[in-house]
Image (tube, rainbow, N blue to C red; front, top):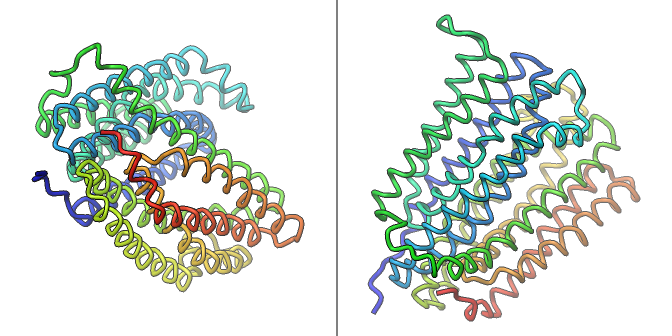
Length: 442
C-alpha cells in the first residue's frame, strides 16, 4: 500500500507565484536601469537577450521531462529511480548548456550580424553575449536543479534561490552602472558580469538545498542506466520544447502583424501584455503546482483522484483568473497611465482588456488541462493540437479579423482568444476520455 501523501496546491503554489512574479518584476527593473544608463546600451543588451532568452526556453525541455518523471517516481515511492533521473537530468542540462555557451562565445559575431544589429551597438552586444551567453550553462543547470526541487515539493527553496539571485544581480547593476562607492562605471560589462555571478552563487545555494532534500543524486547512478532514463526525459521534454518554440514563433508573427497597424496599436499591445502577464501568472502557478501533484498521483495509480483534482484545479483557476481579468478591465485606464498618457492608446487598451476576460476563461481550460495531461505522461496529443490550433485558429483568425476585416489590434486579440478557447475545449474532451491513464512512465 502506498503511504506517500501528496502536498496541497496552496503549499506548492504560493512560493511558485511569488517566484514567477519576482522574475517578471526584476526583468522590468533590469530594463529600466540599463535604459537610464544608455539607450544604445539598452538596444545592444535587448538584441543579445533575444538570443539568450531563446536558449533559456530550450533549457526547459530537460526540466519539463524531469519534473513529470520524478513526480511519478515519488508518488510510486521509487526513490532511487527518482534520484537517478535527477542526476541524469542535471548532467544532460550541463552538457546541453555547455554546447550553447560555446556557440555564443565563438559564433557570437555571426549571430548578431544575422540579427541585423546596428554597427555602433555591436561591441556592447557582443560583450554582453559572450559573458552572459558564455556562462549560460549556469542557467541550464540552475533551471534543472530548481525543477528537481519543485518535483519534491520544495517550492520555498526555489523561491529563496530566486530572491538571492536577483538581489545579487540588481546590486551588481547598481554598483557597476552608476559607480557607487567609488567603483568604476563598467556599463554593459558590469551588468553582464553581475548577471553571471548571481547565477553562479544561485547554483551553489540550489545544490545545497538539493543535497539537503535528496542527498547525492549521483550516488546510485550507473552508466548502463543512463540512456534508459534519458529517453524517458526526452520523451516528455522534446515535444514540450517544440510547443514552446512554436509559441515563440507565433508571438513573433502576431507582433509583425500588429507592427503594420501603426505605433498606437503596437504600444497598446506591448503595454497591455505587460499587465496581462500578471493574469497569466495566476493560471501558470496553478498549472505548475497541479502538475507536480497529479504526477505524484499518477505514480500511485490514483486515476479517479487525479480526474477529480484536475477539475478542482480548473475551478480555482477559472475563479481566480477571470476575477483578475475583470479587475484589470475596470482599472485599465489607471493601469495604462503607468506607461503612457496617450488617450488613444488608453482607449484601445480598454477594449483589449475586455477581450482578455474571454481569453483568460479559455486559457484556464487550456493551461490547467494540458499540464494535467503532461503530468500523466500524455504529451504528444497536446503538442500536436497546440501547434495546429495556435497557427490554424490563432494566427489565421488574428490575420483575417485584424487585417482582412480591418478590426486592427482588437481582431488580433480576438483571434488569440479563440485559440485559447478552442484548445481548451479539445483538452477538456481529452481529459474526460481518460486515455491518459495508459500513459504512465513508471
